[in-house]
Length: 328
Length: 249
Image 1: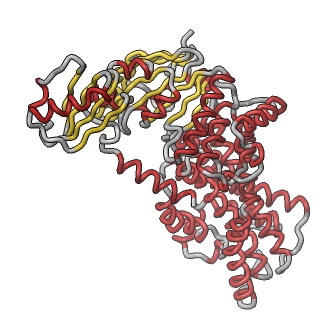
Image 2: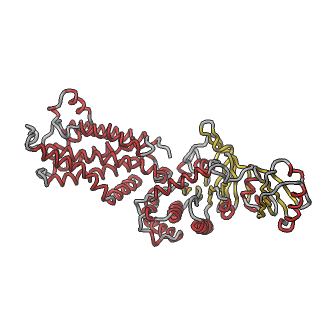
C-alpha cells in the first residue's frame, strides 16, 4: 500500500490557483520532497493532506484514509512539523511532549516510555526539564520533530524543516531526519526551497512551481536530464546569438536572463575550446563557472528561473526578522 | 474528557508559573478595595445591605477580578494563535468543542483562584469570615462568572488576529460590564436608566450571588441570580464554541 496517494489535487483562493492539479504518490518508508520557491503551493499541498485545508477538487489518501471523508483517520496517522514554530514556550520540553501524548490519548506508561526514547533520539534528554523559551532554534525544531513522532504516525510531514537555521544546525537536523526515517521506518514528506536539502535527504523529489508539479524523479535522475557538467556563462549577449553554436561534446545550450547555461560532458577539458568558440562568435564574457548539475539547474531548465530569484527573498527575510523578534 | 483535562491542566500550569501575572492582576482589585473601600467607608453607609462600605465592596471586587482574569484567559487563544501553538491542538484528532471546553474550564479555574486570593486578602481589611455554606455559594457563583466570561473571551479571541484590538474590548466591553454591575453602588440608588442597564448586565447577578454568599444579603433574589447567570454561562459556552469551531489556522 502507498503511504500517500494524491490525484489531481486543486486548491483555489479566489482567482488564485495555489495548487493546480497536483498528482504524486509516496511509498512506505520513502522520504519525498516537494521542492519549489515560496508561494509555489508546497504548504497548501501539505495543508490539504493534513486536513487543515479542504481541496476544491481532486483526491488524496494518507495511510489509506481519504483526506476529505476521513479527517480523523488521517489526523491519527500523521505527524506534522509546521513551518512556523508551534511549541508552548512556557512549558518544558518534556511537558510539550506530554501534552501532545495526552491529546493523542496515549496511555501514561507508553507515553512516558516513548517520550524518553524520542527525546534521546533527538538529543534533548539533558534539556527536557528546561522551558522551551530557553531553547535554540535547532533544539526547538528537534523537539517538534520528536513530538510529531510521539503517536507513531505512518507519515511525517515536515514543512520547511530547516528554514532559518544556521548551516551547522541544518546538517545536524538532516542527520536526525535520515536516522529516524530508517530507524522508525515511516514515510516522510518534506517541503523545502533549499536544493541541497532536497538533494541530500529525499529519495524522490517533486519540483513544484506555480501550483504545478513540473518534474518528479530521484534527485540523480533529475540531474541526469541536465547532463554531465554545466558551464554557466554570464554575458551581455545572452539573447539570440548563441542558440546556433554546437560541438559534438555539447549536449544542450539554454539562454536565460543575463546568462546562458551549457550542458556538456568533460567540462574541464573542453572549457578552453568552448571559450574559443564564444570569442570567435564575438560573444562578450563577463564570467564563467563550471559545476556539476544541481537541482537548481533542473529547476532552471524547467521554469527558466532560479529558485532563489523567484522574488520571495524579501518575504523570507521578513519572516525571519519576525521570528527573531518573537523569540528574544 | 481526557482532552478537556489536558487543556485545563496546561492553563493551570501556565497560571501557577506566571507569578508576575498573578501579582500584576491583583493590583487593580486591591487598589479599588483599599482606596475606594477605606476612602468611602466613613462617609458611605448602605442601609439594609451592609453596615460598612468595605464589606459592600468586597463581593464586587472579587467578581471583578474573576471577570478580568476570565476574559484574559479566554483571550489566551490569541497568543496561542500568534505563537503557533494553537495549530498543535487544532490538528490533533480531537474535536474543537473539547479544546474550547478545556480552555473555558481552565480559564474559569484560574479566575476563581484569582478571586479567592482577593477574598482571602479581604479578610484582613474587614470582611467577616463567612460560613462554609456561604463560602461555597460564593465559589459557585464565581465559577459561573468564570465559565461565562472565559467563553466570551474565547468567542472574541476567535474573531481577532492579534492583541491590538484587545484594548478596545477592555474599554468598551469589560469596563462597562464591571462599572454597570452594581459592584460599587447599590442598585436602588441609581437613576432608572442606569438601573435597567445594571439589570441587563449579567455580571450584576454574579456580584449579587457572591454577595449573598459572603454577606448573607443581596439586592436581587439569589435564586434569580443563579438562573440568570446559569443561562448566561450556557449561552456563552454555546456562543464561544460556535465561533471557535470556525477559527482558521
